[in-house]
Image (cartoon, one colour):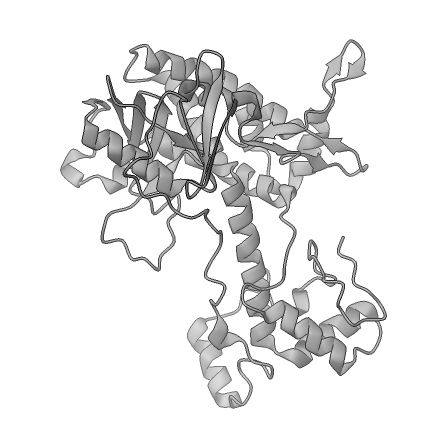
Length: 401
């Protein structure tokens, strides 16, 4: 099923969903799964009791509750998409479940002593790590925040009058100064406009990245750390992307820039995947390894897992692993909301710049690729997915599709 996902181009996501959504059961369509997990249930069981109970801590340690793994990390309809005919489909949730079956077998093999993992077992783990990283709430909301920031910059650089022209062209009416002022303030406020996170856009991103990330991880050097006495916890975003201590704080950390990927595999085992390019040249061909677990290593894995969490940490009810740990506040997503402040100008960022200077800038940046460039004239109006406050002073309320 992963291959089917990976082979589908983002623009064909709806076609893929149509092909996959009709799961027949005795001549009828199977009931749609609405309770969808952002972290695999089979994985959470590795940190739970035999009765599948797990303890959840809300960051920064303000509340604890013991619950069933079936109820942990549930986000209703998180991967549900709407098909062209208006019906809702859980095709991706079902596709993820098929991949998880292979991954669960590989995790079981590793936990019972099989190492290194090779062939299909290795690929299954690499695919699951890639999927788990890309399917999270953090990825979706980070994508959403970046989209809002880009709209803010696009409008802010273009100026109010350019925005007026876009609205008037789309709505075929005169936009008053009061309306324009309100739209300008909402679109260029820190962080940009409020956008409703899109399952479609999130899954398009997942489709485009899951196979390349799987291959990237499959080629990495893997080390498994086994603990006999110390225990590990996990989180709602269990794949931690690590960088060196001198990594610039202003740079974002992503798949291509991470020096290693850290994952607690279960209560007594963790895995570190190091991309070959991040390993010193003389050691890049080093084989997979097994590392004896120590107290220091357990503390490091648990702390990094806590720092990578979004809202929740999970541990076995018999464990008490949070004493002495730094527990962060729940994570916010996306860039600093003030990014681009210097580019936001009511008259437009390039207002007052003479033609000779603009021509010089154009020459310095090279020929424009019109197929890939984007200006405010390309901004769809109404902005798709925008949540417009009811205070908008318009006789023609904007309804985002």
